[in-house]
Length: 284
Ligand code: C2E
Ligand code: MG
Ligand code: MG
Ligand code: MG
Image (cartoon, rainbow, N blue to C red; front, side, top):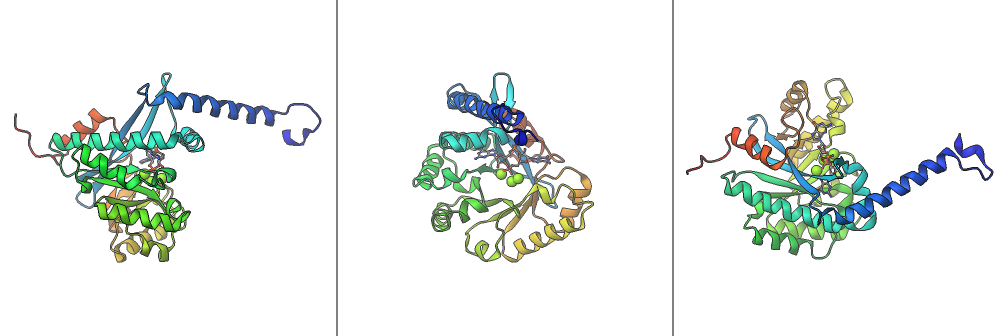
């Protein structure tokens, strides 16, 4: 409607676009200082094994607290990617996650695996594997205590480099998961070539699974396929008991979602973990 107005009047559409640009520019400026101003933090969302419902690990999820409010990832990750700030932020996330993993281990939570989201640009940096190795050494974290989450498109958009890096990381001994599985290429032929350990089924297939037969068929197939390819499979976004029951029927290995816990800040996650009794009793 506004687009059809023509002439030299400024349409509502132009104003919207202008405002969106201004907002992005403002975020880019603020994001540049976010690290030094200590505005970034990692929340941890518990992941549980099925059917035992025991805590096995957590996904580290980035939060940006800026001028009294949390800015959503959907808004600032694209800005970070466009400006290249994602590299500094991704490196901060990686280091912070290693540091937190070391801390959990110090507290006796030695069986937890911390999953870290890796952006495409970060993954494709030539020294990425070396950086991971260096941080693991620096914080004395065994490679098996972390898992790197990569999306299919990160690998497939740069197939040769992607497979090379996956193999490097695999030799290092870290666990590798494909994030948001089912939303991208999901090509079985390619999946066979990836040295990955886990598929994370995207929340979009789980959201309505109690009511949607197609989603049931898709998720069941993904679980069976993972099993046949000897991959572990985790379902994201479990919010209700009926959803959990369906995933249990499908023999899904692990789940993550609000039903179990929202992402928690460090202290709350430690308390949560200690309550779940995965830790060795602490001697004082
Ligand atoms: P993701 O990796 O697929 O992470 C799962 C998202 O689903 C998280 O959103 C989480 O809070 C949300 N979630 C988990 N369980 C439930 C549930 O039961 N219901 C609902 N409605 N949502 C649930 P979040 O934290 O907003 O993160 C969004 C995306 O941002 C992530 O999707 C990931 O792609 C990206 N991201 C998060 N942290 C980082 C990071 O440190 N680095 C990079 N590069 N990307 C990150
Ligand atoms: Mg993820
Ligand atoms: Mg995901
Ligand atoms: Mg997702």
